[in-house]
Length: 445
Image (cartoon, rainbow, N blue to C red):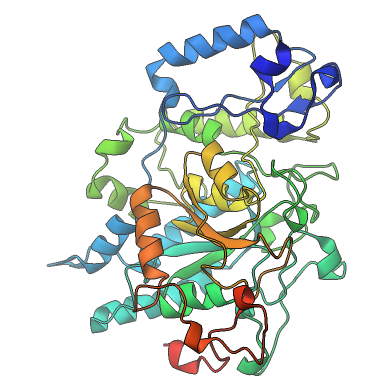
């Protein structure tokens, strides 16, 4: 009975395991796909769980989330020119996304990024996009759009040695990027070249994942928070586990602190005001500083010394019959990709899907996961898991964003690949084919 009502089949937990001491990550679609908080089966009874479900159904504010910038809106604002100039530039938007990423990593403890590029590196890319818009020749509708890429995909000089969330592939070192002097030596995946060079998107960072893609909860990361930019260091986690957390509980709380704009009713003015007044300490522009401070203190309490297999001190100090943990699994293995998109620090996140690694986390984070047919995009530059199943795809914020990304990442002929361009002498596996040569200096500007 408990197994049927409480345990999703994806957890792999059997009914006889219900008395053991660990938290089961549970997500359930209610209204706008808002997951329920995790709970410990040892201290949770079915009656209270069913009661909380009924309360969430009747609580109109419980499904409230923040408005999310779309690719279409951002691209349209890039092209909008008034007496004061362009309404929005790529540098403005990417700076705001960097603030969101910083806030998510340092304050919300989301652990979405394996590496976050520095603000100077991000703005350097964005400035080239702005220059293309000034000349009236943007590369695509994705030009200037902030994006992220999963840690098992090579991204040239930004992530030449993909570690797939494992210290094994970093040789115990904290930085997986190897400096090279010749462009021919840079290892770059086919999908990264399409997105960043052909479409002109701006890379914000590299997203976390379950080690080698082996996991469905975002809790099997093998890096222990040692990679990336300085902001990823000094977290409050003191255990060997470094889980990625679902942002929806915190986004819901933050949405109740904002001005009250409904997600579907937010207009251009709402987003422009937020982007222009964004700061790393308060990217959501919350006016009630005391409420924000209280929320961040609560997050620190929940995540301090956090081990997902044990109760935190904050959990022990609370009455578990009336309060459940807000620490939610985002799903996996593309956990960081889903979290970055859900929180808004990335408008499009490239990932891989072998047995649900894009579709599962997107379902748990109120985003859209897209897994195309096997072999649609080349696996060249992707760390192999199961070569006959590995598929490159993405997570977007909405169906419209997913449609735009799909259209842009195809070639001019309307197909995602050109068999005639496949270099069979270099790679005999057609699904890992190489479509581009390494001399991409013509695409740098």
